Length: 498
Image (cartoon, rainbow, N blue to C red):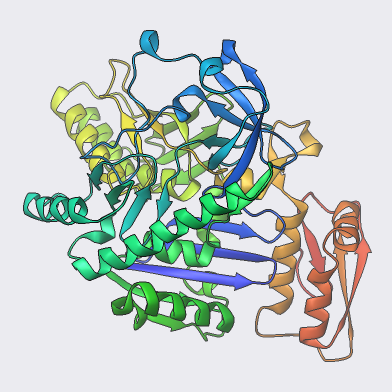
């Protein structure tokens, strides 16, 4: 499989796309004004203890207090055959300590964010730190070792166990997927960096008062290269010289064999457009995904779960109904798995495959689906096909999915649908104005028709977005408000509305 990483870096936003065989399977966003918190470490103070919820609210200096479950206070255990992360404490509910026995109001201690704030809730935190490096994850609170489940060769797993067991440290280690084939020197360099990082965090905690930031996770570009890129990647393409320079320095330090695969993209078309990622993002914001046979996949997100339905559509097959249904389901399997990753769907997912009468067909669909999902970095569990033809999946959710990141409830339909946020539309407008071939003459005034809400947003919240364009093109951008424009649309004079 051919793998590539694309990094689109602009001042207001960084976007990263993971491509497999030329198609996007993951798209990550980080915006200057809305950076994620996952991985950040804080000195927190307990504000409220909720015995009935087996949890506590912890102030870490944000608008909303963080949520700390009792499982996240107990010492973790490492699954030796796990996926590169510490497992939650495996204590029977009856024997588990009460939250009010573990933490008290006013108590200060070090916590790490494991989930960003979602759906009006504050972020989720844990008292068990997990510090990722290139080849290792270091857990200061536990002296155990584990190996990524993606490393399947038993001889290699045993080699890694021996290396990890010999590393000097007070905490535990997990070998990440990229650790396969790594030398002892690479592990030692990672160990030294991670243990020194842990020491700095705890020293800063000792000299700080809660709430305080103790450590910030790497930005998206560096984090993606650290966590996503393995030795089988064909290329890492970056469209910004400064980001390219930072990534080059980073790779030279932590993964020298990958440094030569880093490329500065100089194409005429924007990088996401040239590789088809923009079209994939637009498609991922729609509920219906067409299949080449004429069938389709319908994806509907609700508060409780994500429903995914497969339909034969125009496909009528060539033989009997069972073969038609089986063929459509098999065609849908890899696309459903890709859409789950691309949209970053989390929580409970229910996939409604078309009813199959043949038990062997059901089993084959299940096995192929499980194999496709095995490529996913996120943790998941799935149940066999039910008697109703459903497959239930739970998938790890740490950040908001693509739809929630790029869209909001539609004000024109009382919240029954979604439209792009003003920031999303503003960034699209910026890209449209800068995209080659540039059609404007230096010194001229470019008139852009926008909705009043977008005009206010550009004037009050993000005025530098258009000032950057004016400076780059040598033009003046004049916004003309037009209430008749549909939501999330704009019109550049002389061009069709977007």
